[in-house]
Image 1 (tube, rainbow, N blue to C red):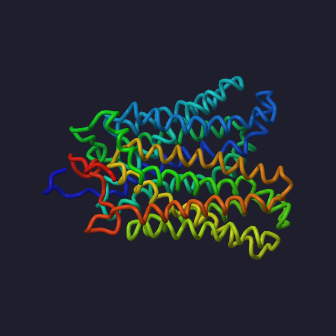
Image 2: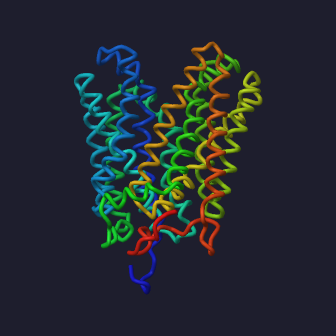
Length: 414
């Protein structure tokens, strides 16, 4: 785009990315409501069926790094289209899978695109808006994921009950095709341009020498770990401690998902104003919410608004964490994808620690307190990071990476 040319509206392009995020989010969450059907149809145990979830998460963590590194020099819009084609293929394999191994293969293929799509997509989203709106652009892209979190399980369950679990994956395949078409048509090519001076992978890896990159990745893992460690057992807490019926869980999950949507958008707006402050405040709010929910879990009137706040504060840090890690890495795409990998590592760690607390006989309150302790550590890490970073004179947060807005790179990160 030349300086004299009119800037196109970023709305359609961001909406296309959000649609892709919605489809990918559905693939991640929808399986939870389909496991009994899939297990019966493919003649596998509950434990084996559960590997369709854990296998997906592992593939996300691995694929985020591997695919981002492999596609670092390709035009980013082309990469996004290829990732959506991979997503579409994985869900198609799942839809027609005659056996459990083929079904697991489909899940892994679909998962490989997950981390790289959100990593590369966040960079493309930022290039469609002025620098001061970068975090909000990332939040719009992630809005698809948060809406999928709200609708994923009930969506899968509804279609699965009426037309069978395969119909769910056929529907997601169609959404993937629509997202691919929209991305090809609506995302401007200029937003995906890779600078001609693009350095080697070895040079990209040097960005990870920055302590600020590792501090941000650590805060990401701990923040996600604390929230999802508690969320993994939230159904048990709400039914066994609070006293809600099993039939109440769907609408309570909608309350939580609504909080995710609100937190994502509010966090993006706050991060564009003062990113580091927004991150510290939102992580502190998440710590307080988890603690209060643990203390008041036996009260239905208190539990409902706290479940909403769990979603709000749980997702509010996400846009700022992604823009922070990429800024501190000098715009290296690998950093954004590493952030997605860090979140999945945190999810696994948090769920494991929460499960250990329950197994130790500490009750269904315990994952909430464990989660609060993990996020409190994230607050400490993020506070230290904000106090040791070197902001630019013109802005309370680091300037946007040169890789995102010009053909020149930033000086080496601190």
